[in-house]
Structures are given as structure tokens and as C-alpha cells.
Image (tube, rainbow, N blue to C red; front, side, top):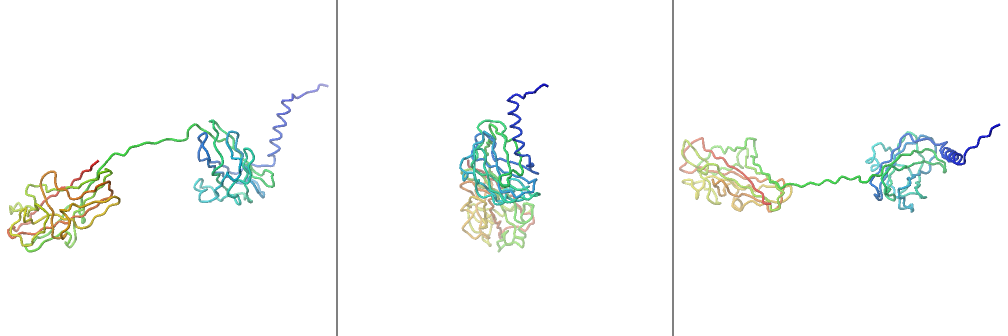
Length: 361
């Protein structure tokens, strides 16, 4: 009869494999299982690990072991391996978390080598449990894939388990750079309607009319913003050489002012020194951030009867400014006018005002 002899190495391998299977012969794999790290870069410290598991077996669990493969650095002091079990936080990591692991505590219960053990209450099948390791474990220093095993226990006997290979890469970051260009923004509209026009109605000698006191108030509103460190300035001008409300049929101009002043309701004849028309700060302005200053030529007098200087030069006249960056600026100006004693009756008095801006970088 022939005898067969198994080499010693083969015998030891069989013993090792048998030992592995013996330790898990009564254990099942989790119904659902996930490990999500906060960093996968080599040597990253105090990496967060979300552990998600759904029991497959009915048991009265009392512990969870997390076994980090060789290469991970596991703090040897259990209190340094901290835990977050706030359900809202866990669900931010993974919406499938139904509940935090009960009775897990704020830190690991014990640590031995690569194994961190955590307290646990009874886990129900059909429920997905999560907990978050927030400190105490550092990533391997070399790239590769490393095993990570999670086990539930009842009285030191393994109930369910799972193994996943976790990555360690040389760089898990992408650095983004950019520059922001300087800009200036400005715009103009009117507070009523959408046609950027204001009808002052019928002007009368002896009365000063203001756009803010019409049956439907309709004023000029300028907007702006800039990220320029020295701020911005708004300008305006009349676009016609007559510098005022001009009637072609009457060959007459309700002239704008040479300087800040108050309109007279009984002006004999309109001129730069005795104006009949202009704009003036209403007293209403706002910003989202930063601040604005209205030019002093358009403040200080009565908003419904005063006017500031008006010109036809293409560079215009400054009406407001900011000394630094500003956002969401809005400034409201009234349009005020009167008919002089010599103004002919006509229905075609008109003027166009142009508004611009600049930024100082």
C-alpha cells in the first residue's frame, strides 16, 4: 500500500485557511455595507471614515470591530479614536443611513494593534446603521489598496462581517486658481414704467413741477457697482446744444442751470443763471455693500424745487461717487421744471439726458 505525504508547507497552509474559515463559519456578510473616507491621499492624518452596515443575522450585538489593514496608522489610545453618531451628520455623508449605531459612545471602547473596537447596542435586520470615525486613524504612507474589515459581535463571537479594499493615492486634491477682473457697472431707468422716459405734463408759469409729485411719481434712478479699490463716479449730460427742454415749434428752451440753485416759479426768461429745468437728488439711495456720496451740487436744497448744474459737454457733470468698492448702488433723482413768463405755449418741449460712469482702479 502506498502512503501519501503532504509537504509541511501545504499542511501549514491548510491549517491557516481552515482557521480563517473556522472563525467566520457562523458569520454572514452584511446585507449592505459601505466605508467612505474623508481623504484617500497617502499619509493624510485623522481621516474620517463613515461606516455603514445593515445586519444580515438576528443576534444581540454588543460590539463592532473595525480592522484596518497593515499600512494604516491606528492610534493606540482608544480615547483618541473619536466617533460622531449624530444622525443628521451621518445622513449628510450617506442618505441611506437609517439610524446611528446605538450605544456606540464618543470614542472607541478599546484598541489592539490595527483593530479598533466600539460598543454597540442590539442591531435590527432591515435597518441601515452608521457611525463616523472622526480622528485617530492616518492613511498609509504608500499608494495601493488596503483591506478594511468590519465585524459585529455578540459576546465576542462574530455575527456579521464584510471586507473592502480601500485606496491610498499620491494626491486626492485639485488646486484651482483664478483671477477676478476689475469691473464697473452702471445703468439708468425711471421709477415708473419701462420706457426710460418721464412726462412732466403741462408746465405752468407760477408753478414748479417735480417728477416726484406727479400723480404717478416718475423719477430718474441710476444704478451701479464696482470692485475697483478707489470706487466709481456717475456722470450725466444733456445731449443737445440747447442744454434744456427745447421746443422746436416755439424756438424756445427751458434752460438748465449753470450752478446749483432753486427754480423760481415766476422766472421771466430761462437762462443758465435763471434756470427753468434740471435734476436734483431726491434723498433716496441705497447700496448692498459699500457707500455712495451724492455730489454736493445736487444736495442741500429742497428736492422738489432745486436743480444742479447741467451741461452739454460730452464729459458731463459728476452727480455721485463711491470712494471704494460698492455693490447694488441705487440713487434717485427728481426732474424739476417750470415755465418762464416768456416760454411759448407748445407741446413739444423735450430733452434727452445721458448717464455714464467710470471706475478708478
